Amino acid sequence: MSRFLYFDLGAVAAHARHAVLADRNLPTLQGASGRRSDEPALQLFRHGGFVWLAGNGTDRSHNPAPALVRAQHNLTFPAVRLPCLRDPQGLPLLDSAGPQLMDLITQGLLGGAHLVMVDPNTLTVGVGRLRQRRVCR
Image (cartoon, rainbow, N blue to C red; front, top):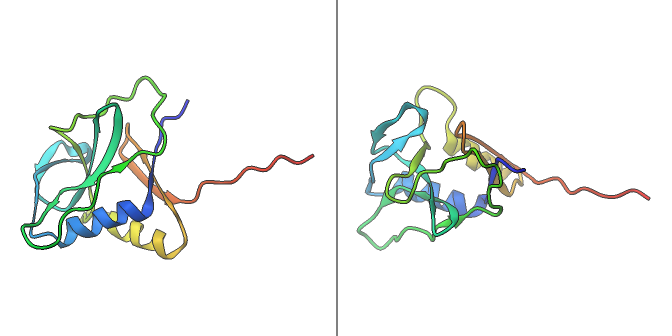
């Protein structure tokens, strides 16, 4: 049973860039703290039977937000409760207290990674490659 969500790194990076460079950001519930903030963040939510990730940046100029990023695999772990579209969970991109999620995404792109992994229970984020398993005969 999978308890992790996997997203395309390139698409997530587009949302992260848009959220950081946007004119303003929508208030989002930030991580495990439970406080609302209008800092740049990625929003994790469920809608229409799927799990989505999107940036919270809004722009009135010529730069529209990228299309939503859908998880590549559905969750099969029954204990995970994801927030709905109206109240998404935020993953802060810029955090003064620890490592920057924006830096992790950027370094992952430069290092050849192609997936973002999110643990919805702990809101832990990782960047990397999915291993290719071979059968030896």
